[in-house]
Length: 251
Ligand SMILES: Nc1ncnc2c1ncn2[C@@H]1O[C@H](COP(=O)(O)OP(=O)(O)OP(=O)(O)O)[C@@H](O)[C@H]1O
Ligand SMILES: [Mg+2]
View 1 (cartoon, rainbow, N blue to C red):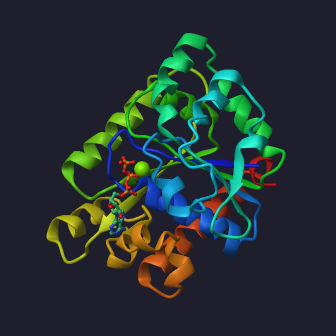
View 2: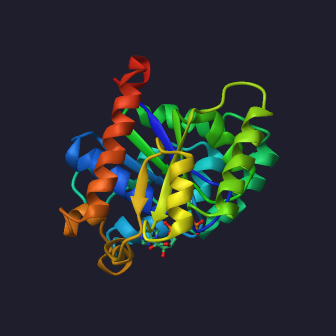
């Protein structure tokens, strides 16, 4: 059962936005049993789809799952979307790189994902930015890594850095799918950069996406026919097609 990580070493490129909307599409459009795992101590995905006031926010235990190798089932909670579960983040995750490093357990994350695969058809992981130990573990464990890229020179440079970092590593690394994020086709530079990679999927810059933070729901839940919603749906269908090309991973 595939684990799809959304990662970039660069911050603020749309990782959380894409994670939440892909997880929604998996649960609602594809009717898959879906888990969104928020690995970022900022807890933005947890804030966006967590049920407010369920007593789990800020519980300070997210890192203990990784440190102690506990059964994640006890920490999983419902989200505001039926069929979409949440393994939430809190500030304790700030120490996970050190925890991984101290443990010397290079496969701790992969093992946890394998446990979750027994229960879920799709696992979407919202990663923190940075080339950290967590990122390395995600690169090894995920079945597909979505990398959002804003059409700007610095963002493309960060993407190139991720690719060269991964190719310098020994052992299995997740296949990478770059996605143009926050695209404004009125801008000459955006159009030019899109022409460089015409096959990369595109998520438009849209005010409906910004509204997610106040409504605290994925866009599909409150703006079903908005162009951005349709772009997330198209991206999700492309991911499903890609996973289906590898039957061992799509089941
Ligand atoms: N397609 C979009 N259209 C408009 N605003 C967007 C879009 N994607 C993301 N944003 C906005 O950009 C900001 C950063 O997005 P997001 O939090 O998803 O990025 P991130 O890569 O997860 O950031 P971080 O590295 O801090 O985790 C947010 O305010 C979000 O609402
Ligand atoms: Mg984020």
